[in-house]
Length: 386
Image 1 (cartoon, rainbow, N blue to C red):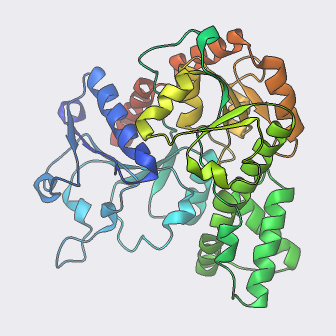
Image 2 (cartoon, helix red, strand yellow):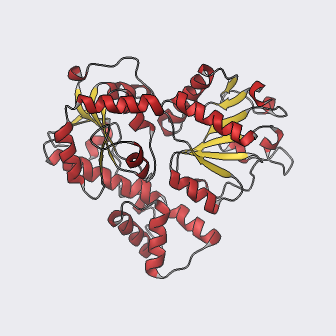
Image 3 (cartoon, one colour):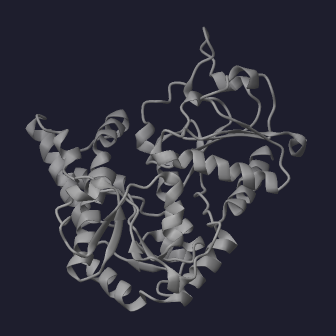
């Protein structure tokens, strides 16, 4: 019965995360169509929700949408309880980001997430819904530029943001709070393999504090930006600075890099700002592209896969998932955050390693395209149906 039903797919919000959710939804839409699925693709910025209520779907899929947590007008019934079918909402950010939104959860609601740690966190702390590991897929460029003709030896498409800014938001806090903040930052720096929550748990253990339940989640929600917006950016700054000091040229994009403390380093080449649509062109014109994870410790991202599908070499700080699914110095280059000198070694050794780029491409095209992700989603839908 479910095979005859359409999939209701919501276009990702083009205003969020440089349009990445819109890109994800577009790619998933094309992939589902290529597999013969009937897909209703709707843009909530233009269309009303109410025409889709009262109907049955094979699945309802969206990307970090918050309209799922709404009540039907003038009732205490979740809006999407009036839609029949499993709801799959992609969460890219840490699950604690969404703490406090769950006064209204529709039935048959499920989370897809790109980090296996996030699945464990949801299972432990959010009991009203389930979660499944399903990272995004990659996108191949329209044209593969011959490796020897590429413009950039090493590119990085991220922006520069001062890592100290998130710390400033805690100015004026009481001494006890500031002590936890500083211990948490120190812990993340010195224990850089720990997840957001494991580092927080270590701090609580070290100071002998027992924080549980609602207070635990509230406190972690406040501190979480110190991981992915503070310490992750500190490591980003240190990694790029170290590469530059070791005479490795890096091409970056956007005026934000003029504010970096190493902006005047002759090995840093600052180009014009990129639009979201231009990023894939940079991968396709790079022999090697640097990836620095936010604070996803057991994950893979679309940046890595898009780079591989461009036959460009990926160099990235390691995660559990990357170590398990790729071979270092065979189809990817991985270094630990606490040994940036290893990144220097890897780049200098493999800067023109076309075979490594091809191996990465083969791995990505076989297992990590959006078509493969669409197949995995359909398998999950069948599992939920049964």
